[in-house]
Length: 255
Length: 163
Image (cartoon, rainbow over all chains, first blue to last red; front, side, top):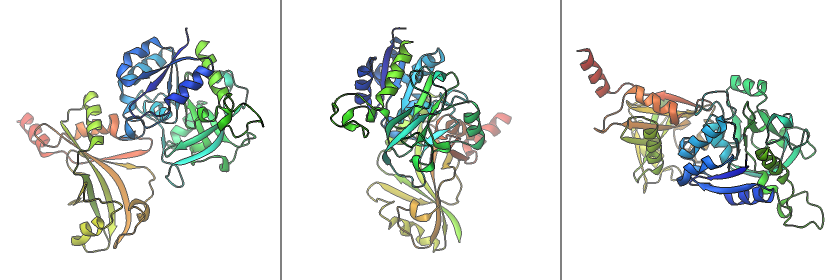
């Protein structure tokens, strides 16, 4: 595997540049691929679906994009073992496409990231997410330590995981919880959950471990200038914080 | 207190409905037009004849430059239509009516109504509406779909087939 990474751009995607910049900083061979060039996705070994408002969130967040021709390629590629990472709106698209948690048929969603609670408003806040599974469960997290805590920014109006009780039991039993919201020291608590997400879930992974959907943005806390925990006098343009997750992702693509 | 339904539609081009129609057609759903409405199911203690004007007076939910409002004959989807309602949605009237109370309305639930029409402008069959809900319009993890009755055209065609 050559390790080429496609950063997908749908109409309305708005986080592609910082995602691409960080992937390259972490050693990734990454390019932007726009919706009008879906066929090009066959040349790539992994897909990153960045944040934004694909198709203006028409019908539901991620619903139209999940049926876009680019997603035909992503579905086919992930079924052959390619990696796919969705961030924020990208995560919503992966859920609408049925790729995560992957407990139902393709394009038959069994869960959703929907309106935040208790107040269904946009929430922009610094958060921490804690790895909630064995790092080796996914190639994308294999480079992280057990219980790794990663800083990120949540910035969405629809980031609360919702599913029926039966589907939530499947998520727990199938070890689909990739990351949960946590405090900076890794401890868990309701105060760490910004949006009422079920079980405090911030990210889901499919059974095979090659598709991961994360709601908060690690790429927005990945440089010292926007990293809350930066050391005094550190280079503001040096990568930090959430970059550790992207290094692990890039290493997973090359594996 | 009576349960009534109001439909608010755009009278300017509805880009969201067009996008959804194109996506549905790509998925094989046979429809030529798609109409989208914001449906409010309200519990109203006021004068039924003034319901439209009372809602239209709330400028945070009704903009006469781009909306038209219709009080529906019954609080049920029509032929060719499906109402999509979010599970566990809040029903506090102030949240759904733009933070402002409307005289007489005690509670309100909001749905999105999608009405599919064929090339003759007639409602498509109930089965086609069900397909549209299943394939795109409804995420059963968070939403519930209420289908309208079979349309008269579909009933006529079914009767013709039997004859």
